[in-house]
Length: 204
View 1 (tube, one colour):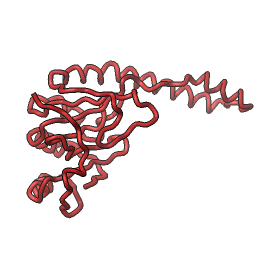
View 2: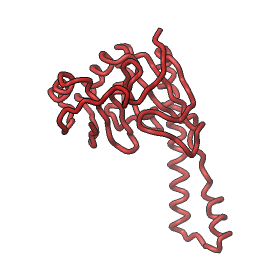
View 3: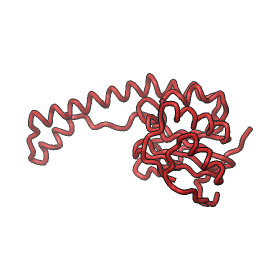
């Protein structure tokens, strides 16, 4: 069931508590480092090589892009990486295969690390920090918070594409989530576990 609106504030906290209580693992994907950046001067030179003359507005836009890139890279280093270090005690395993419930990276297969963590109440103070589902994004946080039960993903999001997917295990959970306020917006439809994203992990 697809939700095309952010889940934030008190609803996010309620859903987060429930997800941690009813899951055994959660997943986060994170850039290994800030994405590569082609300096504006090099791009301007490339334009000139094609016989184009970048005007003042273009040069200003390239400078603004560079400043945003540098700001994002600084936030990634000062906020996201320390955030991951705080989660490290709950880490079960990590992998570089660039596929997770909402995404499959084809262009840069080593650009992301996927980490699996033990779902437990100790994770709540950290996972609540973004304040909403769509806030799980570079540069401040890892991406696409997902929850698993026995290897199958039942709740995930694409923060960049701005949607959340929920797969209630039965009509009782569906009704519980609706009463919580989760805007499922569709009648309950059972989805076989075999159709849900599978992640291989072993709990301690």
